[in-house]
Length: 292
Image (cartoon, rainbow, N blue to C red):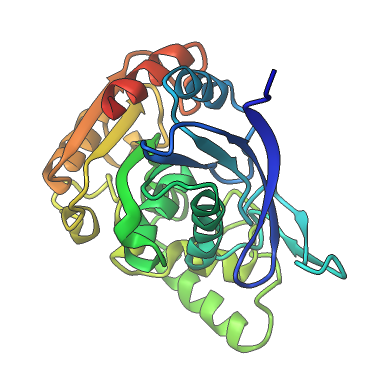
């Protein structure tokens, strides 16, 4: 019996080898690329397995895809396998994420697929949306599925009491001094990120402010300009989607998304957290309803 799912590799345009789990499907349907979040991988969370199972049953191809943000500190191998590069979530730059996604589009194109759906979780939601602005295959992306988008700027606003705007300037200066790979002070963030990583997260721009749920008056031009259908799945107990200490609420987050996204299917899962623990099947069912 043919094995439908296999471990595969692709190579980015800047010569990093990435691994992933590929499952075949109908070339007459879109193929799905799953983009994991900060500090994690493509296989740990159970909801990923549940989505994969239901995609298999409905003959959708997918790749559970490694990206250069896999793990906290991860060595990646060059295309000729002669040297390694230290990356992972502490070192990656978000503005390089399109290179990883495009390499997976290239892989799926080589398998006969012509249209693609990006499914991002957590930080992967930001990477997925940014791809529509920075990616090499923008016109071949037909839908987005955003799982647990998080308000990173609301989080850092609350943590630093607004000082993060000054921290950005410090990060820029450190990078000019050749210290891009130094770890930021503990006061900057709860994670020991490098200065280059920190700046890629928090440099002030529309692309870095797309999920500023803590600013209820803000309508994101980045989200507003999306023309393709988008599904958003939120857990109502996911406090990364709202920051109650500065007035955030899940209701405000949903309102923000409805105001910013023109073609949005927004699903709220009661009692669910950031990784949908205990609600994985409900997430998977919502995904296949959106696709079908």
